[in-house]
Length: 201
Length: 210
Image (cartoon, rainbow over all chains, first blue to last red; front, side, top):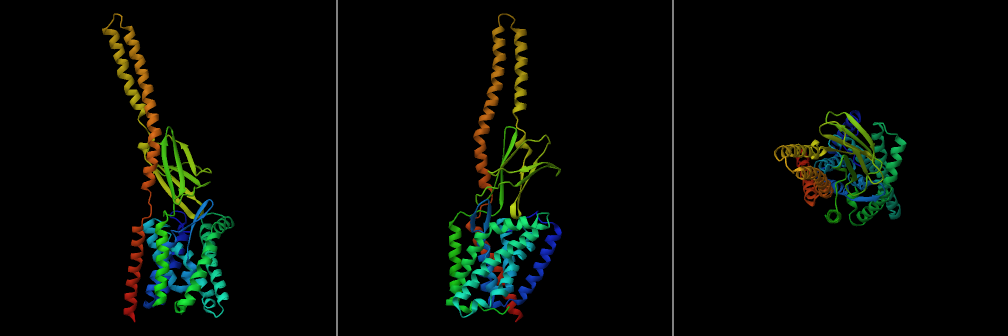
């Protein structure tokens, strides 16, 4: 749900930009250079994921994948998503350059929230419990992103409840699909290489 | 190391899938063309979904709003060519934060039918009066036929204009469509390369700090 240029008012853009700048700074500080391949790969996954369209009625929605990105990267999700958004804006005119701050924040903030909520749970002993949490994580991250986009749009005079309902209903298939994807990824990583899920954020 | 390899494989798998399906930029696009005295627009998201009931605003080249309306169930919106001179700007605002702008050049709006018809009329009428003057005897049928053929010429002219309009509009539509940014695998791979490059540079600086 990239917000295009020319829709948001200047105060919203400035707030988004400053919040993102702070968070990206913190994320860069927290990054260890050993993490770099992981960060780069997940940033590329995010970059490509927005091209995968989920067909839904009258509007157009796409995958976001901020759930799994948050789980695997923690605070590094902010720089990862920012870099991916920059290139989406430059190469595909997807979103916008003035809206980079807002778009990064609406997608990376739920990622870090889901990290703090679920990171410990998915490493637990019980497989079924961990996978259920993974589904909720994937689902919730898209939901929170939708709410944040609606919040940003509210300041341009749209009614919050109307916009929020529209966004959330349109993204319901995405939420479910991402929940499932997160389950597969987490299940896979738990079996093959659980260390990837380890992160001291 | 094995885990990272699997991560790379999952990602490559996704990338291959994405490249093989029709890929379109995720934004709204406006296709506009002029036919007769109206401007027609068809609006949709580039993955094909039509842009229904979305707000359209038309501005003149000074930025003054001339008119606004909503797209219909097919995503189309049309309006009569306004009197104002110069280029027109169309702004489409679709749901969930999507927006697009388009420009219709003044040249497209004013066709030259009127002018050409006028030019054609004057010489022929001059001719008829002259032929009347010069050939006084029994040239009446020639005069009459000259007048008739001037009329026919005008009709033929507008007929040709209409047919050309009809034939060329779909072609122009196709040209505009193909001009719209479609995402190529080149751009995707390029973008991924840039991403790795940037994080590589960051990694370099982070490692030096340690």
